[in-house]
Length: 170
Image 1 (cartoon, helix red, strand yellow):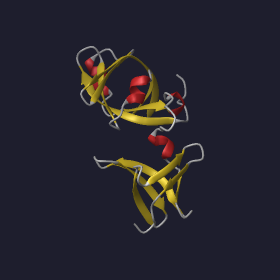
Image 2: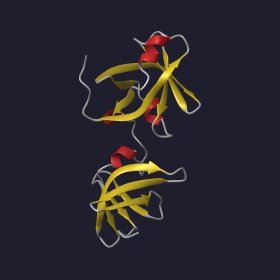
Image 3: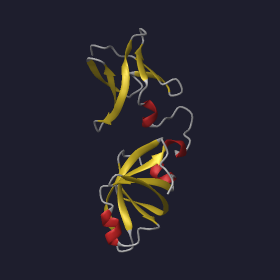
């Protein structure tokens, strides 16, 4: 068995079995499941182990994905995976068009406002249903900056830098 890559990104969780042939139901963590759909090499984190699986078949089922891989041939085997986390190596994510980025690439980015004041570092991202928000940790100040054009002026994933029209006391 090969060792898991250092750049694994958790993208979903197994929610249980589907049917009688070992298919599993996977709930993507973000509404967008493009990486899971594009990649056929997944890693399952379950019971303290991290094992690779090669997805042989995959299809959308409402908000879930249905996946089938070798070694999971029965509903009992699929049920045993309930709660497993599904991850994909960041290095295997499909390339994006210019100007687009994956959320994972924003984690750890420095956030600087128009005045050049560093507001903190992106610790996470969340969605409030209407928009995405950058969770910025500025030491004592914790900020939520809407990830919209009116507030985010530039994102440089190579430099891990985000320029915003935002103040630390907002």
